[in-house]
Length: 114
Image (tube, rainbow, N blue to C red; front, top):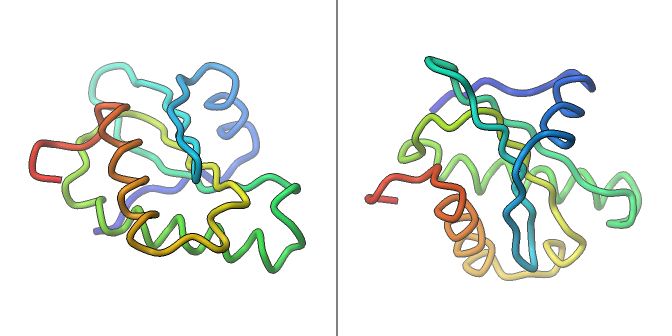
């Protein structure tokens, strides 16, 4: 499923500043709940403490792949930013899937099938 991406620094800043936070040991989800009729927009980020550019890009690629597994069953819930932690680099894929599912459910962005 194709989804709309957050790209501008100002958009990221709004979500980081005003959004709610849900997280676990592998990732943090920032959610800025919308007004009526707004589409879900998604952004992916990492902190510089994750490592160099190669490691940060790897974490973002993993986040995008994980979200694509749940994008079909996600309900519209505003602007989302997934922030990957350093632990994602060495974590098994199955644990990352569980982590993504858990965080999306906490935020109310996943329907009952997901």
